[in-house]
Length: 339
Image (cartoon, rainbow, N blue to C red; front, side):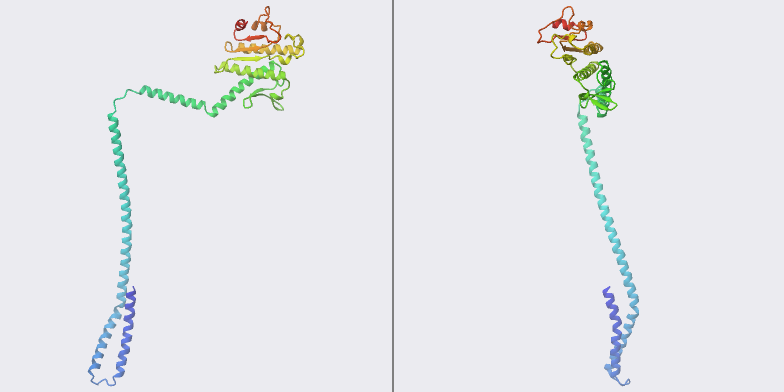
């Protein structure tokens, strides 16, 4: 492009320069008819050169157009070359991917062939359909166990058991006429205590009053739990040991021989009711539960002596010892052996 501009500029400036020299030569020559060979030659040369320059000036637009066309063709060729290079790069990349894919396919086929050869070289195996069925059965059992042992199912199961135990304890608390027994009684497994749901709010066992109530609520809680263990055949020792549950009814200064004659009538009834509850709870789950009681209270009732020692042969140990009573599912079998 720079050459084109330089050529155009010089072609335009040439005639002006030569024309001025031509005028100068014309001014020097005063007589046109004079015969000066040198002048004639110069004039002829200038006329020829001027004619040729005129041709160049007239051809300049065509030359410029031709150069512009060549420039356009050059740019188009360069664009096509750039596009071709991009396409060639894309083809080369695609070829590489195809080569990698073919290499992976070859590797897979090779591995499959090795595996097939290994399997073909193995000896014939026995029929495993029975084992597969057993495995499927075990998987089903495992799924059932996982469902049964899920946190949600465990919580639901515990809530159900707690509700059943609470119903029993509520009825037994009313049979013993314990404080707050007119309200629902429930077992609080989180804090391992007994709670009465009163109209004024929950009342835990520590706020239920005297030691008589505490003994009664402890007793019904243990009996309810052991009955449940026996009914469900759970791996818990099926016996309960109680040490002097009637002690809270005997004043220390009047307790001589365990006779209930020194105890007020209401307390005598409460003690009798407490032991009767133990006998009934054991009989309900017979022959699964044994209750062992160390006690010195002497209740003058036939059912009491029938389940412990016979009334006609009372066992009277020294004052420092307690009378031992065995309550179990078959009555006095173990009691006779203990004697």
